[in-house]
Image 1 (cartoon, rainbow, N blue to C red):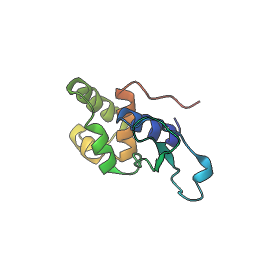
Image 2 (cartoon, one colour):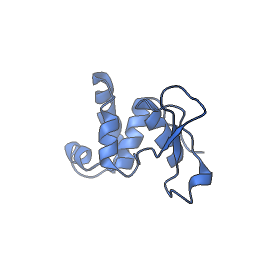
Image 3 (cartoon, rainbow, N blue to C red):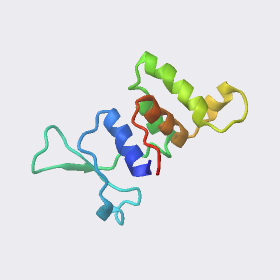
Length: 116
């Protein structure tokens, strides 16, 4: 799953709408730009960059807040599998990278796509 698709899927799970990757804006914003509509889509849109969920632990912390109790348990299981195999399970959870948390989050919600 490409980084752009991961960011879009996480953002949509967090309530963002009408997200898409706009490659033409990459020269202006190296991380890419996405569109988020304020209210219903209209002629006027508000362009904002999505959080960088794959590199920012704070952004992933906010995303994880949308998980319900059962999903939180599933998330912890996926996180244990997505982390490198070192140390105690609790150590893995504490030291998981934002990218590992993003993968576990998407797998929990059934939105993860295997790369070809």
